[in-house]
Amino acid sequence: MTPETTRAEALRQVTRSLAEAGIGDNDARFLVLDVLRLTGTELILGGSQPIGAAGAEALTQALARRRAGEPVARIVGAWEFWGLPFGLSPDTLVPRADTETLVEAALARLPDRTCAATILDLGTGSGCILVALLSECRRAFGVGVDRSEAALVQARANARANGVGGRAGFVRTDWSAGLAGAFDLIVSNPPYIPAATIATLAPEVRDHDPMAALDGGADGLDAYRRILAEVAAGPLRLAAGGTLLFEVGHVQAEAVRALGRASGLAPGHITHDLAGHARVVAFTQN
Image (cartoon, rainbow, N blue to C red):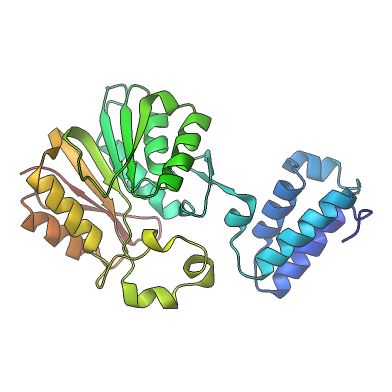
């Protein structure tokens, strides 16, 4: 690309280049819009305008990164979840559409979204789950927990950017260590990939997502065991009528449900995602 390349031609070039690498059209559009700081309307109506020297250089670099396997979300540094924008850092996962099933299942447990519910998000990462819930429950207050201070910095920024910063607190700790009190909702999308299978993941995940957010131990269930044990032992607990909800790998729901029963919780309810996979397991007190 050159400074004289038009916006429309830049999109065509990026699309062709990514197609040669087996990458779909949507990534090309995301890259062009973000790198050139354009809206979709500006790209259409101003397609004949040249991208300039800075645009040509930035777009060439972004295209090379995507062709090398870096996810487009990492390149643009942000992604959408629940219709909200979320900034990313190397210490946070890219929010996935599958995780919206966890938000939907949690909201179903709060039929009165005007109530002053308390929410705990264990392993908050970018804060996407907690922020999405607080955006729907205007009087709720939430706490996001993570072991990574860098992730918490990003989560705080995302909470502020989405207008819920005043109702969200963030704490650095190892799962619920040191936490006490009762919560109406406890939610978590913990690491659940069996350690031995991480090497087989797609390069976009294996090489760019934080390992601490992927590695679930030998069978992928270490985090579930830890969280369930801590909730069962207290002083962290579910409030009366409260619910603990996990996102799970699509072959893990029954194993996680069995762990919950063994910890003394009521048999877990399983929610499936849009692809039909068992995606969320929800527990209540017996």
